[in-house]
Image 1 (cartoon, rainbow, N blue to C red):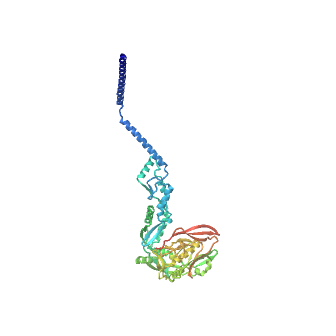
Image 2 (cartoon, rainbow, N blue to C red; image 1 turned 120 degrees about the horizontal axis):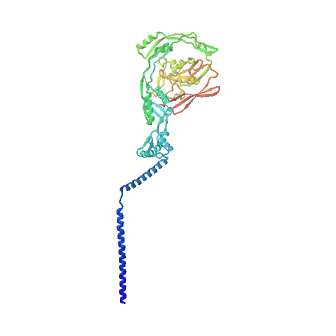
Length: 522
């Protein structure tokens, strides 16, 4: 029994030894494994160049992806890029149509349609419609829209980024009719209060009176154009009154030879024929009583504002009045204007009317109102009456004679004669509508027309009963035009006058006579 126990104990001890040996072997194996692992780890070396390359590659991939994404977003965007404005109006993120509406509302609609000038106390206006001003808004919008859309993909992206940081503002280009602008400046210059008076002459009481003229002011055309151009391009004319640049305009020298050639006439008797029907008016012989050289010496030595030259006349034995009215069988046109019976003004009307009454204009001849009526002086019988001067209605010598010239002008239009020179008043008149007046000022503004018919035209003028009437007589032809005068108001102060022509009852066409602009009273 006890031997069995001892044997058992020995068996257990042997098992414990075997277990310990096994554990030791495992421990040695683990230790060897760890040593092997340690040796393996020690053989792996860290390469910094490879790691940097990997990081750089990752960054490049991220950059390329970002650039591609930005480019795709940029190219697919249909709106105007950020940082873009037109005339200071931000149009970022807007479509073309939205940008146009916003710029018109916030900028263009705030601009005035008139550029104002001043000379002394006088104000002159230039409507943009008169020179056909056009703001090229669509071009500016195209430029704004094209930011970031032109060039290579790289160029587009760079421009978009740059525009976000540094804003871009596009201006609106302006175009206008330079020929119309020249005409408007000439018109403004002609309305300046201090007009140059060129040497002129008229015959009064049988004597030739030569005026030497007076120095005046005229607008500097190029300087005025530069002001207008700068104002339009900068869009800074709203509420601004620009001074008109002027220069001293001196009258021409008196040309005695030219005056002599114009007034010299050989005496001729008037007559007319029936087959063919033709009138040949009388001509009184006219010449200087002294030689041309003597008159030149007188003017050179005396240096006066007026010179009286004695004339000698040789009258015709037969005049047009002797022939009778049968020489002018047809009324070509007639026109009347009403007047208020103010004694001074009516006196002036009668004097001017009597001056032109009976005047015969031969075929191809040009009628000059100032030459026929003469200078408006007290000696000639003219009186003070209301006139326009320096932008105001004041009393002036000869006030009212423009009504006679305006009445004659309308009769000339209806007779379809050629208007050679004519100007509208600064303000609208009471006796004719806009576009139908003809202002005159001795020495500066004249009304002239040419007889474009092949038969003489006679003026018959009268004043009485509250009306000034001017009729034109001559000889009608079967193919003459019938004239309808039509005036259209094309602006707040602008009128266009047309002649509608009819022949044999059929409408032939319409002819633009004039475009006139008037100022408003103070």
